[in-house]
Length: 187
Image (cartoon, rainbow, N blue to C red; front, side):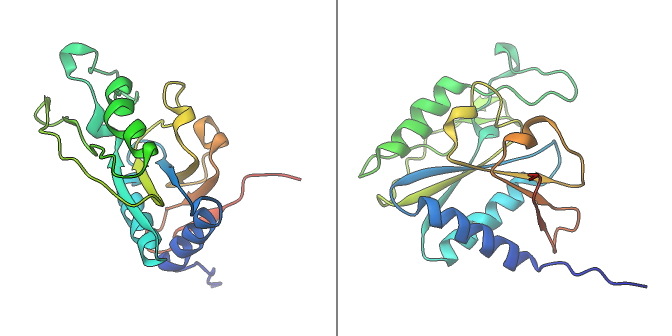
């Protein structure tokens, strides 16, 4: 039986963090961690943010699920569809304040989907050079596509197509302890 080499999780995350910091170490930037439903975006985003901090850079976390809409206000979705995001709130309390830098504070969550209620704002500040790692599903949809500086697509298999095609990096997380970078480009 042939054993196929697989990188350790920390090695994949460190390499990705190094690539991101090469391009976005100055100022403020957004890193999206996207993928199909149930692909593990949140856990991967947590690990990536930790790798960025380990590399000596400030990194913060948010999830687009925390900027949803109540079911009665267009928040109900059909099976297989990503939950709708309140784009105006996302931009007003997270994206725009984070981009301003300096002492401007932002809110990493505005809505609790379990209780279907807005949450009390928790204002966060950070240094001028910082990254915000945001996880979610279908982050490349038209109303969100222009927000991200770098997009990681996590996939639990080899399926191609959809929003994966516009990702900066693709990571196969079929084996969560040995995620592998996948290069979809062709020469």
